[in-house]
Length: 348
Ligand code: BGC
Image (cartoon, rainbow, N blue to C red; front, side):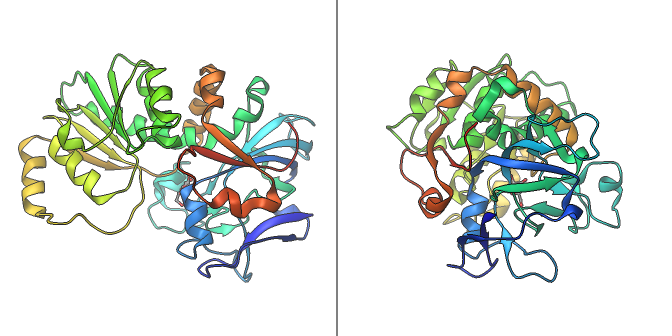
């Protein structure tokens, strides 16, 4: 079969090549790939900045935003041939740490977790892949190709759950929410926040393209420019850019008692940052900064329900480009109007 593989930490090594069929030890369920979403993490891995090959191997099959069709359910009693499935990304560490021991691998404490297509286990950008039955999530068949959005939806499901849990530390009636960055994660956050009794605002640098209209279609308000120019102090900020200056501006702008959830992974700082001044603002306003990564089975379950409930037309506008596996390099190049780019391996 063919797969998109890379030698992690070595830029320029990604290729679409012949690769051995998936090994039975990767799981008893055999799946035919339909589509795999591309995200910033994949770009980082291909640029040699992130990623780990399986122990003893030099190459890693890329891809963690999967959608496939079961060819052989193996030992699984709940799956059947033809079912649409998405693979859970993370596996618990082998110790296991207390959180992994209770199934909260997203909260792994010792960093020895593994992740498909990212850290030490092959991903889903191959014509066929295998998975353990308990890590295969059945997708509502009516979602069709939109099932490929399930993984990003799990990330935001966890992040928003964290915000709501932390919000319970005191009496809290959030009225306004700001999402910074209108990429797939930001737009899915806006979708979920607008299902609540909140005024939702989304800020992004793009002034044109599909993003402003997608935000307005949710009944939310679209902003460009700086967070500092907003004329309100959000109760909730979901930060999806990972950009230093946006993060600092968010801390300065969040309302008293407000919560900022950081979901973006960036690098570097913000010019002129005076750390103790920023910390003082957080102290004096009782703010909480939460970092949130990955998702456990509870989030996958909830995300599946929420995705199936969402407006299909709106969701389909998030996928702005489909590419063939042989053109994966095009898929990894960001174009100005891209939201989610998907590599399609076979017809739905
Ligand atoms: C994935 C997560 C993963 C994280 C860090 C993200 O792109 O969606 O599942 O935990 O990268 O590796």
